[in-house]
Amino acid sequence: MEWLWVGSGFPIGCLAVGFGVALRWLWVALPALTRSFTVPSKGRRDFGEVVLQKVCRNVGAGVVMLVNMTANDHDWLRQFTREQSQDAFTALVNRHLNLVYSAALRQVRSPQLAEEVSQSVFTQLACHAAKLKPDTVLTAWLYQVTRHAATDVVRREARRQAREQIAFQMSDMNDTTAAWTHVEPLLDEAMHSLDETDRTAILLRYFENKSLREVGEALGASEDSAQKRVSRAVERLREFFSKRKVTLGAGGLAALVSANAIQAAPAGLAGTVATGAVAASTALAASAAVAITKTITMTTLQKTIIAAVLTSAVATGVYQTHQVSALRSQVQAFQKQEEQRAALSTQMLALQGERDRATNTLASLAAENAVLKKHPTDVLKLRGEVGRLRRENTDLGSTSALSKITADPELMKTLRADTKKKMTGDYKTFAERAKLTPAQTDKLSDLLADDTVEGIGRVTTALRDKLTPEQINQTFDAQQTALREQVQALLGPDGLAQFMDYTRNLFATQLAGQLKGQMTGTDEETAAKSKQLSQAMQEEIQAAVTSAGLPADYQVMPGSNSRSVASEQEGERSLKLLDDIYQRVAARGSSFLSAEDLARLQEHRTTDLQYTRKNLTMSRLLMAPIAN
Image (cartoon, rainbow, N blue to C red; front, side):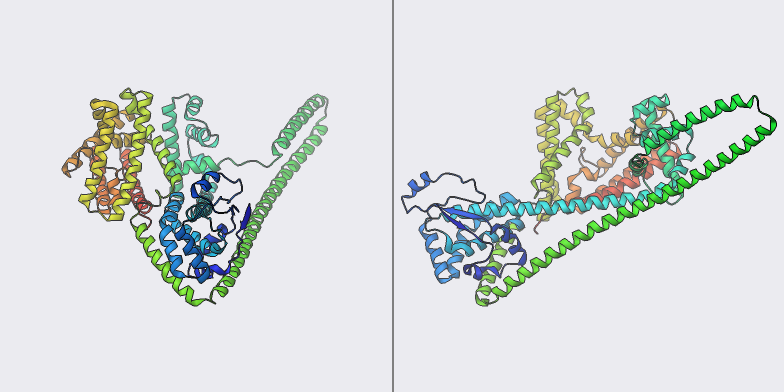
């Protein structure tokens, strides 16, 4: 075997193709140039014989067995290496570009990254054309180099996404810390403002993280009563903070208290406290026994002297306790300062490392640039060719249906799994009512998850092709028809009818369930009001949909309606329709809801509309095609 090592530097043969590539193409290409390839040293033979004898793998990373090359590839490579012929190299690129680009696209799942890989592969071909053996099969060589270059790009993108995720999590952590700094000074005062039962419920639920069943057992109530008690107590805390200009939602406040209310005590404090308490109690008991015995025989003067001594001792103990508390506070402050200083030192070292790497990279690129400037004519030719290739690749990318979501297979896999889990929870009651088997329940969740994923692809297509509202309706009508057919095949006609009815009323049922825990009154009264609210919401939804001339199974919740994401006009229409439904339900609810219940409903309406509008905007950004 003869070994052909590809070095990290650029041979003379690659000078004609390097400079016209943007700096980021070179950065991606450099790691791939460090790989090695093996070439058999045997002479030429019949093609079939060579192939049969050389079907094997080498365990070395980046090593491939190369076999005979076609006459045209060999002639073009020889012409390029001897004469630096741009036409010969262009012919090679035109012949193999589709193979390289397609292989790269399958692995990196992004047109832009596939362009980077393609540029890297042909740059390596230009650099090492003179070193390839005459019996090399260029197609196999390019395919293997494409695989390694794509692997490098995928790893680089994974590292970049990981860094972005860490930065996002750090941002969320900072936001939570900032909110806690406003809540912490007022928390104990707010807890004191609650009555004893509510305070106990909050302590058990969020300070000790007990379940609602455990909270109910401790309070001598049912789990539902404990949930209502906790919800009302959290709402009273929220009102307390709102009066002091600390604005938080009930859910956010509960999460803050649960995460931060209990802090870890200093290491070793438990042992110190336990030992000190036991010793103190023993000493006091012994002193009391001795004092009682001696007091019987004491004179009045002796009692007076001992009382003065005891008073002095108590005063001294109080003073020492105060001093210890002050010193402990100072030690904690110093510890926090030391932790902050250590964090800043770590950040400084990281920034210095980034600066050094950037400096080294800049120096390397500057040196390469200086070498490439010696051949301006070849650079200009290459620039024109690269421009043409970029235009062709851009045309390919602009017709792609990949979005920021669908371009990442792992993200799509996670999204589908989360969607299936959510659908299983949303349709649990339906599965019980319809008496579905576990297999039918799982299959139904799969159908709904697949329908959601397909809707994402249709939204991306609609945004890319700028479809009209009529075309959008046709697209999603066809999707809904296909879903109904699949559900009917799984559950039968009666099951489909039950499914459609349950889906139509799902939003009203969930809304009533969310507000039930915040309603005033006894358990029986809140259950009755929740049922009336759900019925009113169902009737108003049906009336609004019929009045607008929409299908009976139209989803009024914009976040669950793919049409609202695909079209801003449809999204605004859905938001207005939802707002009108809330207003009608509030008007009807005045007959059976209390003033406090109506205020909760209006607050939920405002929050729901604001959140839905932001969610639609974010969904359009994520589902928009990558290349327009």
